[in-house]
Length: 589
Image 1 (cartoon, one colour):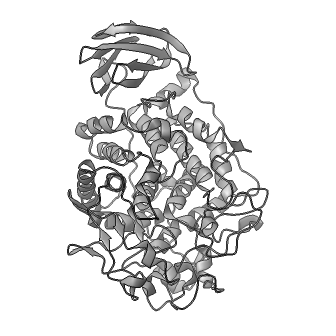
Image 2 (cartoon, one colour):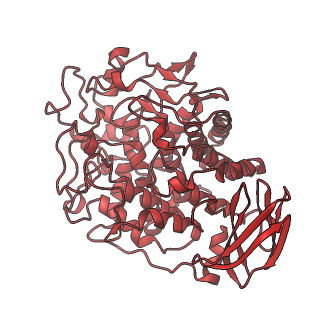
Image 3 (cartoon, helix red, strand yellow):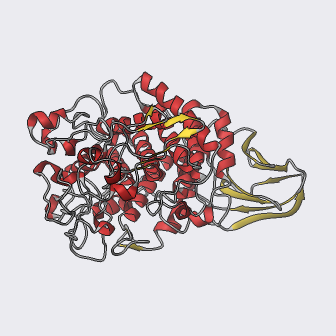
């Protein structure tokens, strides 16, 4: 059980708000949206596949010859509507999706067969055409990606972060299968493979995803394979730094130094899976060196995973940010998302073309869903559902941002910037030449970048600034939908074991180190707190209540300091030395 869960009744930290319905969206509407947005990942499959949007074309497989130094590295997801595999965003997306599955598993259904043979046999690619096969759909999509990362994690000195070249890939508007046959100059095989980049973020995120899969996959052989690969990817991350630059498409400068979230989340998830305290110690070292201040100014996205790290650190370890003015994860998120809302919809960093507006509602909904799970409370349910519903067409324009989602009269995008969607295999056709998708592909399920300033959708396919679809945008939306359905209509699968939550290893009721940060330690016995600096230096202490008010302060302590908390409740304790500033979260019973 999470630390914060036990505090709810005692300190009345969170109010209970029941899950409500918004506008005309029904429970079945959310099921439909979750089905579509989950199956979108099947339309992103590279390699042997199967990839359901390629059904009916002449070339149903793609890039099966991808290799690095003789090692097969085929497979994985295309990151957006092109056919390059950019691990920078793909690693981020795969971890978020796996995390959503792990935390909200009962909200993910079994509506189709993972190889899509059910749709082929029924010749019906709607939800009705699918057949359950005893495995949750999202788990099957995740396995395809995890199997690729297991290949990509070759060794501690070789890890594949990019497959293909963006410039050559973007020359022809054809399916992935057709492009594979065109040759390297036009994006086909053989493709360039980046396997030795100075990148810690991408392998870190991949490791985190694999560590989650090693915990939740019911197949023991898969769990073993994924754990070994998670450890290999983490070893690569630890011996590198930064993020891969892919000229003009993904620049390392976009991260603004926020690359350590990758290895931090890897260590955190490896600890959750293995219970090996070595990973916890390393997670401690990574966490307190994250870019909390810069990460608090921008929404969750592939180049800013700091908000996710803050939520996970509190949920798993009860750690607070070590810099900035934030005393917990809720305040951190509120600073990003609630400062600019319109009718409870997150509108920070949104707007017109090229702002990728949908990332704000989708990412915010997912992060607050995680908080809800860790807090074991329904405080955020209304705003989570409101933001998801907005993306599904519950807005003044009745404008859905998911390709094919037209429930309740919502207008869905019809011109996504996605090559496979149109099933075109003629290299001579141009992107805006009037291409139309096969009927079966119209339910693509991709979340477009969006334009919140326009009342209608752009019909120009080449307008990627609005019509781009990417795995990193879909992932948090799928996660948030899973949370909503886990509350509204949870599904238990036969033979599926439920994970039992454990009390944190460091019980708050006995003398123990809350955290052992570099040079600083905190011990608590009841309401008595003892702080020590192992380096024997001077330090200042400030104690805050949950409103952020200073209730105690001690200046110029040296070596160690003991004091009694002023009352029962939850407190943040900031300890500052010349070299470090650390925040501890404690409670007094």
